[in-house]
Each structure stands twice: as C-alpha cells, then as structure tokens.
Image (cartoon, rainbow, N blue to C red):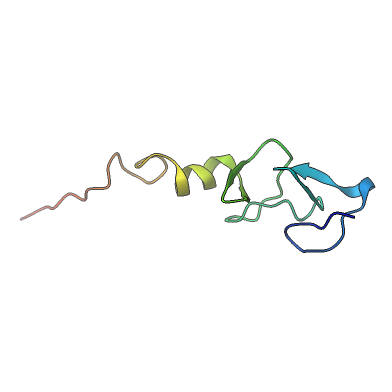
Length: 80
C-alpha cells in the first residue's frame, strides 16, 4: 500500500489523488507556501513539493521581477 508523501500514512485506493507520480490523501495535496488544497495536474512542482502555480510558485521560483513588485533585482537609490 503506497504512503502519502505529506503525512506518511497509507493511502487507500478509493481516496487517493495521484500527482507528481505519487499517491496523496486529498487533504494532504496542498501548496507548500499557502497551504491551499490543490487538484492533481493543476499545480507546479519544485524539488518534489507542490505549489499553486499563481501566485506562490511564480513569486518564489519565477523569473526575477515577476510577482516580486519590480522589473529587476536592483534597488533605486534616491537622494534629496
């Protein structure tokens, strides 16, 4: 019997949600950052952990500037 990668308990056939090649309990397939419940195939993955595609994955691992409040990593310096 497969074990849930989140809680480590056995996942029964009738309750399983298969995503990222693993079987999960429906309540255990959650975004690592915001903890929102995810549906199989409708999320992103990073280092074997699920993330909601927007906004969590995009803000954590997306291109620099996307979802981070700016277009580059540089900070402007203002003088008076």
